Structures are given as C-alpha cells and as structure tokens.
Image 1 (cartoon, rainbow, N blue to C red):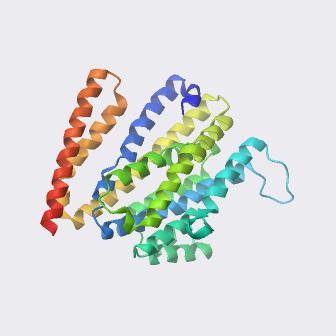
Image 2 (cartoon, rainbow, N blue to C red; image 1 turned 45 degrees about the vertical axis):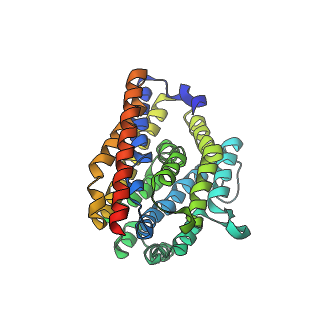
Image 3 (cartoon, rainbow, N blue to C red; image 1 turned 90 degrees about the vertical axis):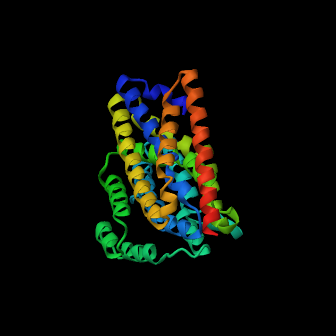
Length: 320
C-alpha cells in the first residue's frame, strides 16, 4: 500500500481514504467473528458467507473482460501488464491448488468446506442451478429464500459488476475484498472459539486467501487501480467512493449475521455492548497518531478483551 500512497494524495482522496480505513477497520474486526462459539454457529456463518464467495467472481470476471481480450476474433489487450495481473488473479481464484492434489475454484473449495462440517448447501446449490438457467439474480435469491441481508449484499455486488464503471469495480475489488480479506480472515481465526481441527478445509481456505491476497492478489489489484487511474483525481475519487459503499455493505451483512447468531445464544448477546466498545476502540486506534492517546486506547482495549474472554469462559462453563 505504501508504494501507492501518492495516488491518494489529493485533498479529496485523503479525506476519502481516511473514511476507507476507518470503515475497513470496523469490517475487518467485526464482532461477528467472536460469536462463532460452536459448529452450528459456523454452519450458519458459512451458509451466509458463501454468497459473498460466489459474487466475488463476478467482480473479477468483469475486470478480466475489461483488461483482456475475450471476444472473437481476438485482438491484443490494451495493456499486457494489466492483462497478466488479472489473469494471474483469475488463475488463483478459479483453478487454485486444493487439498488432495486437486484444482478447484475458491467457491468449490468453500462448498467442500461446508460439506465437511455438515453445513446445509442446498440453498446455495439451488441458487447456482438457477444461475445456470439464466434466472435473474434477484429472482433467484427470492426463490431460495436467501436472508434479506444476503440479498442486499449480492444484489449490490452484481449491480456494480454489470453496471458500474471500471474505476468503481476496482475500488470495490481492491478495498472491499483483496486488501481487506487477509486481516479480516486473520481476525476471524484469532477471535472465534472453535477448534481448527473441526474444520480443516475451511481453515485451509482462510489461510490460502491470507497468503494469496497478502503476497500476490492485493498488490496486483492496487497496481491495476493505479494503472487504470493513471493519476486522474476524479477516477481515484470514484474508486474510493465505491470502496466505501462496498465496505458499508459488508458491515451491514456482518451486522445482520451477528444479530442472527446472537438470537441463537441470548447469554452471549449480553456481552454485545462490550464487544461493540472493543470495535470502537479498534477504530479509534486506527485513527489516532498521538502516542499518549494510542497507549491509553491500547490499554483499555486489552482490558475489554480480557473481560470478553472471561465472559465467554463463564458462558462455556454454564453451557456444560
């Protein structure tokens, strides 16, 4: 990210980038991850999240259509460098290395992870069958009775992928997905309360994304944005505004999923206010630069973490 800071140096871009960082911190460290206390919680989480795994590919494919030559007769891409970047991302997302020496798309890998823990895949598979018959996305989501928050999220993604400008798609792709996913998945692994041995394929999926997006896909996505914007302030602002909208959509999805999980476990929801305070402190830590303020916020955040841990321990003992 540091190599591209100059791209976001205009006054408007600085203000927008500040909002992106604040919103992204909230998304990456959302309380929903700490609500995964058992296998049934994880099953519900995955049955929602799988739709975001699927709709991601529409953003990637839109960019591939923009930056490579997919029509016949073939013509050279406008930029071989950008074409290579998106093709390398497609290679990893659509035909990645999977356990047992297989090659799978990340969507197919996720479905395998769901099946491993006994999560219900009928809804997403029926939805995919409807996609194969060219049923409109909104209609298909209604047919399978997808949660309203999932419907809103997927509808917004597909609308952007099909109707948004290249800059808008890149903004969502870079900051709503590739740049945010490594820390977001690390946050999930650090804060959930589930033994990783219960869901090895899901853990593999998370760790593979952390590895790819940190080292390859994230930097490649930023470079594509830089090449497309080419220093144009309006293009950069458009991308950042789209990024904010995408991050806010993800937060709404996580909020709704967190509420669903809390309704299953009333005793856990009693600690929701503490976890919300932790989220606020994380955002404040991201925004502050005064060393004294940072030190005080870090101390308070640690105290709150211990309190949540203690509360969760009491809940686990009471449930036994």
